[in-house]
Length: 202
Image 1 (cartoon, one colour):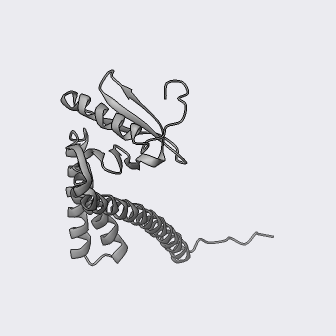
Image 2: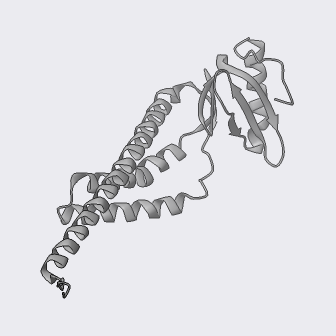
């Protein structure tokens, strides 16, 4: 007795292949959506924090005792280039009618790299009436646990805040070194700065 011959059905195979391609496309779109939403959330937080830093610096400007403009960040040109690319992609997505998160994620990245990062980089650093503004933000004098001057390879005031991980470093121009030390000594004598016993030099 002959076995029945099972014939292929090209139409059914094409249908199954089309369904698999559709599922794969949907999966890729979902993954892209998750990635873009992640970028949007991350850079929204960065923009908000940068704006908060900048507004605080403006409010504190009248308190400035000895401040200067920090050196330009090494990667600023690269960041500006990334911002321009993100802005172009956001404009392209908008013109093509892409979903909002496609446009917003690129737009907020452009806003950070082109606007907010340069603004924060130009915040004057130094000594204020109520604290020290360094590379990682502002530390009130009463929250300084330890501090030390480092003179190599560059002059810097390193501050260890209370209740906070990491240090804040204030790079000091050589011509301002004496004035900075004098102000810190005056604040210490006035008991505005009460440092703890130094451990391992800091």
